[in-house]
Image (cartoon, rainbow, N blue to C red; front, top):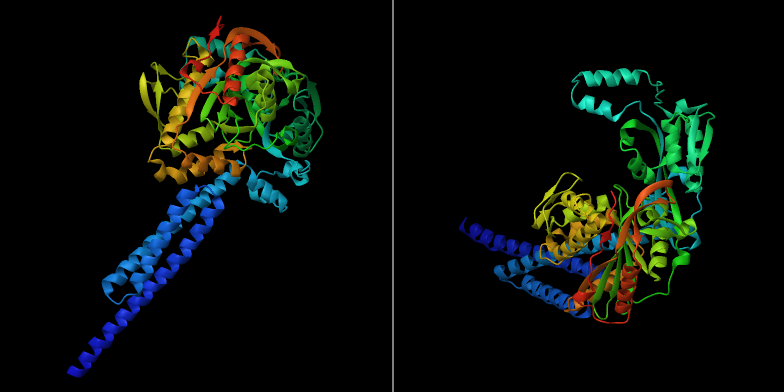
Length: 577
């Protein structure tokens, strides 16, 4: 019995030692494979400078070597240490592969390279989800090898709702009645009754207003699809102006109108209760490819040559590809060699000539309705420059980015309450969420300097975001930021350009010198191309400040160093309400 016990102890311990050694070696093998995959991804993303690459590879090889040595030793503590090292390498490698893969996916999405790859394989619609059955007959420019940008246009079938702003007020008051309300109701009963249309099927035999001057290709597609939806004939009534068409709806000269959603805010400038007084009975979405091939400039080395990026912030929620007004218009003039950046801001209400409209005058913000290429052409003509790249973000994307960063700290030189969301800001530094940040950068009615003050706030927000991105907290929020960028940004910078810029930034110990300049203008009222003869508030150009912007842009390209004297905030004179 005693001999059996000794034998059990001897062979039992041997079995445990052998089992422990096998597990340790299995972990070491898995760690080696994971490390190999990590190295593959590191080389593939090509974002680390050589000196950092050498450190990463050296540390990885050294730790792996130690792990293998320890798991092969006989003492149990040594094998345990080797197993722990293997687990650490395995976990770090998996995390590294996840972050790198997320980065690569984000770069592919925001640069549209994911869509181009899918188009090349004949599966663009499935990969990007951008193609829609309604517009599948639109020529696929990407398939021809052209450089394209896809933008989405939403067209709504709008009818009168039979409601008024007063009705909404009464509902909110939960049926409160008084003499004034009764008089209003009695007066309303004498007005012509509105035949409320609840479905597109009811448009058979009715009149539908369309405008044919602006974006005729969108109107044509919308009419074709609507005919299918109605299942019968209807009469189209053509208008040259969007507001003329809407007025006809209010006057019941037509039963419905086809409204491009990119124009909704323009209409609401004239009809504040438009969202209440009308209803949408059908929404159609179309994807259009803008041929950017003709815009291609000579290829630039973004780490060695000066270049200009157009930063466009559109006043829309949802997809960043949607056409909409461009409320933020910033030219980032960058010299990577001298580490100089000049941010040139142009007011949204600047009264400029639109090349897309035969050089007719309009607000700069309205250029975005016709596509980002229209905004680029307009700014190139205004400043006599070539814009190399664009970067586009909308309200949803902006809020997502700020939230992904965990909020940012932004400086305000005064206390005010924003009309958007009613957020209050104190004088000094304010910590803001995405929703609060949007309120901060959109507010203009609280200031005598209006849109020019809003531009300054936008600059403060850009500084706040850049500062947060350089904080250690970014290591914990990196994945959230990458995920938010996938639905927030659109750019024609190649992913290789972006990785080269990151690599350059990691390899440099010199800070960027960032200065800002805003052009000035004079408040006035003028007619615009987009809104016809209606008189709108605009900011007339100031020739001296435009020349000042041109001089500073050239200064960056000439390799000169910017000083604080080069910074200037835009302002307006003769403000009109």
